[in-house]
Length: 356
Image (cartoon, helix red, strand yellow):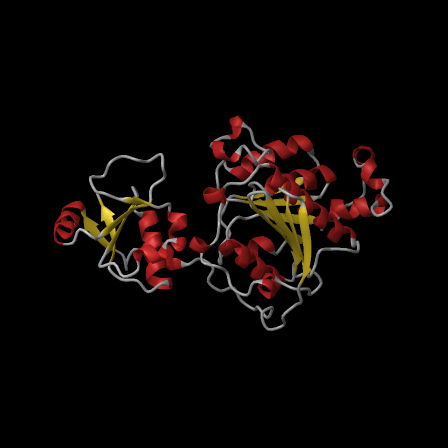
C-alpha cells in the first residue's frame, strides 16, 4: 500500500471517467492508486490484465515471467510487437506500459516462480493474479496465497473457451477445494496441442482485471466460491458454486509442485541406433515412436510412428503389452518426459530413449 495516495490534478483528469462511477469516486480512485498487484505470467492472459490495471492507475504492479517474447506469442499477446521479439517479457511489458501510464511503479521479476522464491515475491502485494499456463505454477501460487492470506484472481483459457474465479478471498474457497490435486502435465490440453484464438485471453484477462478492481474497491459480487465458464463458439456460459473445504485449505507450507520425474534421466535407458538395429532384427515388432514436431521430419533410418508428445497420454494402449518401445526426439527431453510419465503413472517397463 502506497503512503501517499492523494490524486494530482493530472490524475483527476486521467481517471475522470472512473471517478464519476458511484462505486469508485475520488476515494475509490485513491484506493486503486494505493494498491499493489502481482501479475504472475506476462503472456496471453497477463497482457490484458497488465494493460487495464496500468490504465486504471493501480499504484504498484509486479510482473513475474521468465520467458522471452517469441513471434508465436504475437497473435494473442497484444502488448508486444515485432520489435520486442527476443526481449524478456517483464522488460518488454514495462517499456510498453510506461508509455501508457508513467505514474505506475513497476517491479520486474524475471524469474520462474518456484518453491524457493514464491513466498518472498508474493508477500509484498495486496492481490495476486494468476495468468500462468501450467498446473504446477497454479497450485504453487494458490498454496502460497493461502499461507500468506492473499486473494487470488484465477483465469484459464482453452481454444474458444475460458474460466474465471477468485480464490482465497476473505477466507473463501481455494483452488484445492475445487481440484484437490493437480493433473499430470501430459494429461491436460495445452495451447501447443489445440491452439487458442487470440481474443479469448483478451476477454478473460479483462474480466480478471475487473475482479481485481472489485476487490480493491470492496464491491459486492466478487467471484469467490464460484467459477465462471464461457464457450464463445455458441456463447454458452455457466457459473458453478463450490464450498471451502477446511481440510484441503489447511496449507501451512509449500510442497512439491514440479513432477521431478519428468526431467529425471536417471531411470531412463538410452539405446543407440546400432543396438536398436540388432533388437529389430530379432524382434521386428518393437515400436519406434517419433515425438518430434511435424516440421522436424528428417529421416532417422527407422520405421516410426509419429505421435506428438502431448498426445501420448491418449495413446497408452498402443504401448501396452509390447516387448519394448523406443522413443525418439532430437534433444531427448521429450523422450525422457514421456518415458518417466509411462513408468511412473502406467508402470510400464522396457522403454528406451533413442540416441542418434
